[in-house]
Image 1 (tube, one colour):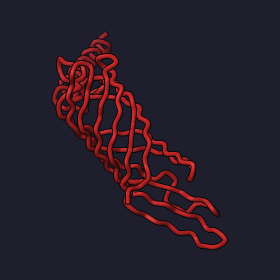
Image 2 (cartoon, helix red, strand yellow):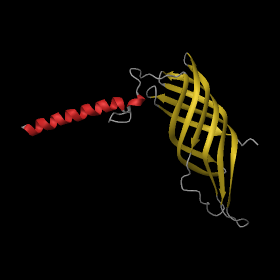
Image 3 (cartoon, helix red, strand yellow):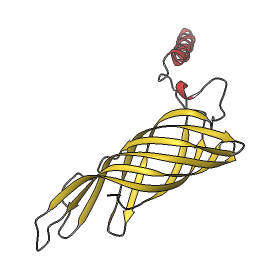
Image 4 (cartoon, rainbow, N blue to C red):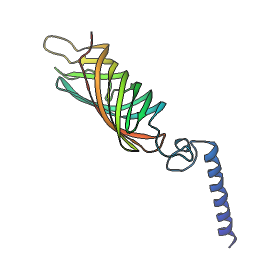
Length: 197
Protein backbone atom coordinates (compact mmCIF):
# COMPACT_ATOMS: atom_id res chain seq x y z
CA UNK A 1 0.00 0.00 0.00
CA UNK A 2 2.83 2.42 0.66
CA UNK A 3 4.32 2.08 -2.83
CA UNK A 4 1.26 3.37 -4.79
CA UNK A 5 0.81 6.29 -2.37
CA UNK A 6 4.50 7.13 -2.59
CA UNK A 7 4.49 7.02 -6.40
CA UNK A 8 1.33 9.19 -6.53
CA UNK A 9 2.98 11.75 -4.25
CA UNK A 10 6.16 11.69 -6.37
CA UNK A 11 4.14 12.20 -9.57
CA UNK A 12 2.26 15.16 -8.07
CA UNK A 13 5.56 16.79 -7.06
CA UNK A 14 7.02 16.10 -10.52
CA UNK A 15 4.04 17.68 -12.34
CA UNK A 16 3.98 20.66 -9.96
CA UNK A 17 7.69 21.23 -10.71
CA UNK A 18 7.01 21.09 -14.47
CA UNK A 19 4.20 23.62 -14.12
CA UNK A 20 6.48 25.99 -12.20
CA UNK A 21 9.24 25.55 -14.77
CA UNK A 22 6.77 26.41 -17.53
CA UNK A 23 6.22 29.84 -15.98
CA UNK A 24 9.94 30.58 -15.69
CA UNK A 25 11.48 28.80 -18.70
CA UNK A 26 9.48 29.40 -21.87
CA UNK A 27 10.68 26.28 -23.70
CA UNK A 28 10.20 23.81 -20.83
CA UNK A 29 7.14 21.62 -20.38
CA UNK A 30 4.82 19.44 -22.38
CA UNK A 31 2.14 21.99 -23.33
CA UNK A 32 0.73 21.95 -26.87
CA UNK A 33 2.50 25.28 -27.54
CA UNK A 34 5.47 26.78 -25.68
CA UNK A 35 4.51 29.38 -23.10
CA UNK A 36 6.06 32.30 -25.02
CA UNK A 37 3.38 31.79 -27.71
CA UNK A 38 0.58 32.70 -25.30
CA UNK A 39 0.11 36.26 -24.10
CA UNK A 40 -2.10 36.02 -21.02
CA UNK A 41 -5.04 36.52 -21.14
CA UNK A 42 -5.18 37.68 -24.81
CA UNK A 43 -5.50 35.00 -27.49
CA UNK A 44 -7.02 37.06 -30.33
CA UNK A 45 -4.66 38.25 -33.11
CA UNK A 46 -3.25 41.74 -33.47
CA UNK A 47 -3.45 42.86 -37.09
CA UNK A 48 -1.99 46.35 -36.59
CA UNK A 49 1.24 47.83 -35.33
CA UNK A 50 4.90 46.97 -35.84
CA UNK A 51 5.99 43.35 -35.76
CA UNK A 52 8.94 41.02 -36.31
CA UNK A 53 8.68 37.30 -36.91
CA UNK A 54 10.73 34.21 -37.59
CA UNK A 55 9.34 31.98 -40.29
CA UNK A 56 9.93 28.57 -41.80
CA UNK A 57 8.18 26.80 -44.60
CA UNK A 58 8.46 24.95 -47.89
CA UNK A 59 8.94 26.60 -51.27
CA UNK A 60 8.32 25.25 -54.79
CA UNK A 61 9.72 27.12 -57.83
CA UNK A 62 8.68 26.25 -61.36
CA UNK A 63 9.38 27.69 -64.82
CA UNK A 64 8.97 26.52 -68.39
CA UNK A 65 12.72 27.08 -68.96
CA UNK A 66 13.95 24.83 -66.13
CA UNK A 67 12.88 21.91 -64.01
CA UNK A 68 10.86 22.40 -60.83
CA UNK A 69 12.86 22.82 -57.62
CA UNK A 70 11.57 22.59 -54.07
CA UNK A 71 12.91 22.79 -50.54
CA UNK A 72 12.60 24.30 -47.07
CA UNK A 73 12.96 28.02 -46.34
CA UNK A 74 13.91 29.89 -43.16
CA UNK A 75 13.45 33.61 -42.77
CA UNK A 76 13.01 36.81 -40.83
CA UNK A 77 10.26 39.33 -41.55
CA UNK A 78 9.47 42.74 -40.07
CA UNK A 79 6.97 45.41 -40.92
CA UNK A 80 4.32 47.80 -39.79
CA UNK A 81 0.60 47.39 -40.48
CA UNK A 82 -2.45 49.64 -40.11
CA UNK A 83 -6.08 48.60 -39.85
CA UNK A 84 -9.27 50.38 -40.87
CA UNK A 85 -12.28 48.18 -40.20
CA UNK A 86 -11.62 44.90 -42.03
CA UNK A 87 -8.99 46.44 -44.34
CA UNK A 88 -5.31 45.93 -43.36
CA UNK A 89 -2.33 47.57 -45.13
CA UNK A 90 1.34 48.27 -44.52
CA UNK A 91 4.96 47.71 -45.57
CA UNK A 92 7.01 44.56 -45.07
CA UNK A 93 10.72 43.71 -45.33
CA UNK A 94 11.98 40.13 -45.33
CA UNK A 95 15.11 38.02 -45.73
CA UNK A 96 15.13 34.26 -46.18
CA UNK A 97 17.42 31.35 -46.86
CA UNK A 98 16.52 28.35 -49.03
CA UNK A 99 19.22 25.63 -48.88
CA UNK A 100 19.71 23.66 -52.09
CA UNK A 101 18.29 20.15 -51.91
CA UNK A 102 20.44 17.58 -53.66
CA UNK A 103 23.67 19.57 -53.50
CA UNK A 104 25.37 21.88 -55.94
CA UNK A 105 26.58 19.30 -58.50
CA UNK A 106 26.26 19.80 -62.25
CA UNK A 107 23.10 18.46 -63.91
CA UNK A 108 23.11 15.78 -66.60
CA UNK A 109 23.98 16.23 -70.25
CA UNK A 110 22.11 19.17 -71.80
CA UNK A 111 20.18 20.04 -68.60
CA UNK A 112 20.01 23.24 -66.54
CA UNK A 113 19.62 23.55 -62.75
CA UNK A 114 18.67 26.62 -60.71
CA UNK A 115 19.18 27.32 -56.99
CA UNK A 116 18.50 30.41 -54.92
CA UNK A 117 19.94 30.59 -51.44
CA UNK A 118 19.74 34.05 -49.80
CA UNK A 119 17.01 36.53 -50.77
CA UNK A 120 15.59 39.80 -49.47
CA UNK A 121 12.37 41.62 -50.33
CA UNK A 122 10.61 44.92 -49.72
CA UNK A 123 6.83 44.78 -50.25
CA UNK A 124 3.58 46.68 -49.80
CA UNK A 125 1.00 44.39 -48.20
CA UNK A 126 -2.79 44.89 -48.34
CA UNK A 127 -5.49 42.54 -47.17
CA UNK A 128 -9.05 41.97 -46.02
CA UNK A 129 -10.07 40.18 -42.82
CA UNK A 130 -12.50 37.42 -43.78
CA UNK A 131 -12.95 36.52 -40.10
CA UNK A 132 -11.22 38.06 -37.07
CA UNK A 133 -8.51 35.35 -37.38
CA UNK A 134 -8.15 34.95 -41.19
CA UNK A 135 -6.57 37.50 -43.55
CA UNK A 136 -6.63 37.32 -47.37
CA UNK A 137 -3.78 39.47 -48.68
CA UNK A 138 -1.64 40.53 -51.61
CA UNK A 139 1.97 41.76 -51.65
CA UNK A 140 3.65 43.79 -54.39
CA UNK A 141 7.31 44.77 -54.31
CA UNK A 142 10.90 44.04 -55.28
CA UNK A 143 13.16 41.15 -54.33
CA UNK A 144 16.90 40.55 -54.62
CA UNK A 145 18.27 37.01 -54.57
CA UNK A 146 21.60 35.26 -54.96
CA UNK A 147 20.77 32.98 -57.91
CA UNK A 148 22.97 30.22 -59.30
CA UNK A 149 22.54 28.56 -62.68
CA UNK A 150 24.38 25.32 -63.44
CA UNK A 151 24.55 24.03 -66.99
CA UNK A 152 25.32 20.45 -67.93
CA UNK A 153 27.72 19.50 -70.68
CA UNK A 154 26.68 19.85 -74.31
CA UNK A 155 28.39 18.72 -77.54
CA UNK A 156 29.87 22.25 -77.73
CA UNK A 157 30.77 23.08 -74.09
CA UNK A 158 31.92 21.64 -70.77
CA UNK A 159 29.69 21.97 -67.69
CA UNK A 160 29.77 25.41 -66.10
CA UNK A 161 27.92 27.58 -63.58
CA UNK A 162 27.17 31.24 -63.08
CA UNK A 163 25.99 33.13 -60.01
CA UNK A 164 24.57 36.63 -59.68
CA UNK A 165 22.40 38.87 -57.50
CA UNK A 166 19.15 39.29 -59.43
CA UNK A 167 16.69 42.10 -58.60
CA UNK A 168 13.17 41.29 -59.73
CA UNK A 169 9.65 42.70 -59.36
CA UNK A 170 7.26 40.33 -57.64
CA UNK A 171 3.59 39.92 -56.79
CA UNK A 172 2.19 37.50 -54.22
CA UNK A 173 -1.20 36.51 -52.85
CA UNK A 174 -2.03 34.40 -49.84
CA UNK A 175 -4.12 33.58 -46.82
CA UNK A 176 -2.92 33.93 -43.22
CA UNK A 177 -4.54 32.30 -40.18
CA UNK A 178 -3.66 33.70 -36.76
CA UNK A 179 -3.65 30.71 -34.40
CA UNK A 180 -2.82 33.09 -31.51
CA UNK A 181 -1.62 36.68 -31.40
CA UNK A 182 1.95 35.31 -31.77
CA UNK A 183 1.62 32.28 -34.10
CA UNK A 184 0.32 32.39 -37.68
CA UNK A 185 0.07 29.82 -40.46
CA UNK A 186 -0.01 30.97 -44.08
CA UNK A 187 -0.13 29.73 -47.65
CA UNK A 188 1.26 32.01 -50.35
CA UNK A 189 1.72 31.91 -54.14
CA UNK A 190 3.61 34.43 -56.22
CA UNK A 191 5.04 35.45 -59.56
CA UNK A 192 8.56 36.81 -60.11
CA UNK A 193 9.33 39.05 -63.07
CA UNK A 194 12.43 39.19 -65.24
CA UNK A 195 15.62 40.53 -63.65
CA UNK A 196 16.02 44.31 -63.78
CA UNK A 197 19.37 45.22 -65.32
